[in-house]
Length: 258
Image 1 (tube, helix red, strand yellow):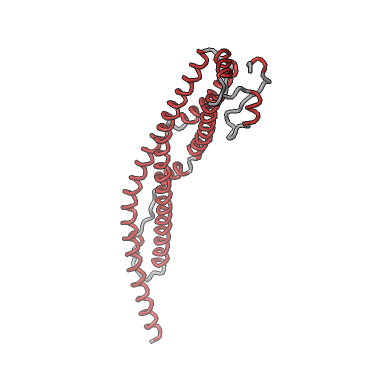
Image 2 (tube, rainbow, N blue to C red):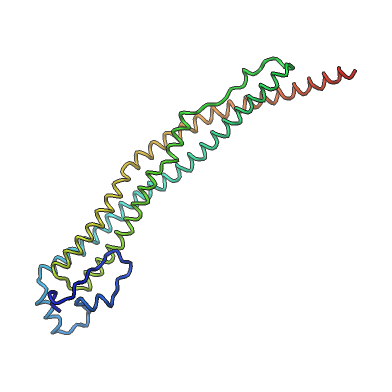
């Protein structure tokens, strides 16, 4: 079938399943059982350089698939590290908040007891815990929606790329294109590929972000160590204060009753 006599038909490389019947009605399909006459006619109608171009394209697509898979796996590994670090920082932030609130409540209870004028002023033993700067850094990291949007965009574009590559390779094997038809598909494929590459380039800050998250996480662990130490000291002081105050209250009541 001459390409000039075909009904115009535009293939969509992003369709997950091409309409095979429609393709067969408009394109010359190559089967292994073609007759000698049909094979000779195809060779006459398709220039050798077009066949070479299709073969070269098929090899290029295979190479690109291998390269892109390797690159994607690297980004996938970094993203998994990001998810783990994000969960770790969320846990640390929640613990920061818990320790901070408990330390504040401990100081307030100690202040209440001191105001009873039963014990000597011991409020100086209780200090509130402040990690505002570090907490703010942690919050910014765990609420970074931009990096997640970039990852989701890249995943979506990769799915398009995988579908387009698979379809293009299949079509190269079964359809006798004219140069115009082949160039149209190449343009369509290049558009998909460039969008995928652009989406992936938006994740170029991921390695630096991982290093920043690690540094802040390690700083958090170090600071939490000193926070917990202060928290334990103030809790022990409050425990002693409560015991001595309750004993003094009981003693005062007994004196009043006698």
